[in-house]
Amino acid sequence: MRIKKAILTGGGRATRLHPITTTINKHLLPLANKPMIFHAIEKAVEAGVTDIFININPGETELQKAIGDGGHWGINVTFFEQTGGPQGIAHVVNEAKKFIGDDPFMFYLSDNVLLGNLTDMFDEFET
Image 1 (cartoon, one colour):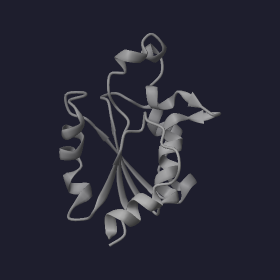
Image 2: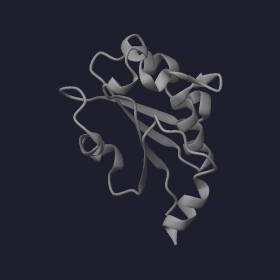
Image 3: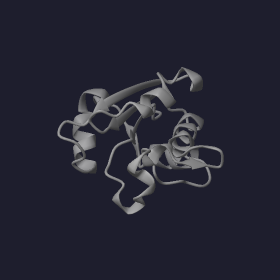
Image 4: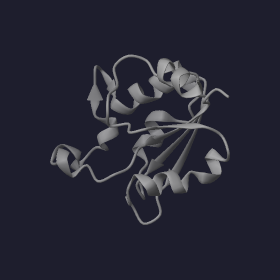
């Protein structure tokens, strides 16, 4: 079964990037003329993902404004405000249980940039 769902991180404290991140979400920092998280979304779409779940910090609005509903990429994007703020990676996956269901999924730390494509990794996973 081809991976069609992805969880992307959009929250966190970004303490290692202070003071830059006091006014902007680290996932929106520009990298090669576009927000860093756009690179993650594009990699996922390139690999065949159609539904993306993005966790956000309480009160976050800039990511939703920048990304929208995913229509720009021809996908569906669901945002989830992390209850109680950032609580780690496992918490993000736990909060996405309903979104994931029994389907295979990709988890992508959106503040990391991956070179190459994810299709090969998906193919390897499926064999």
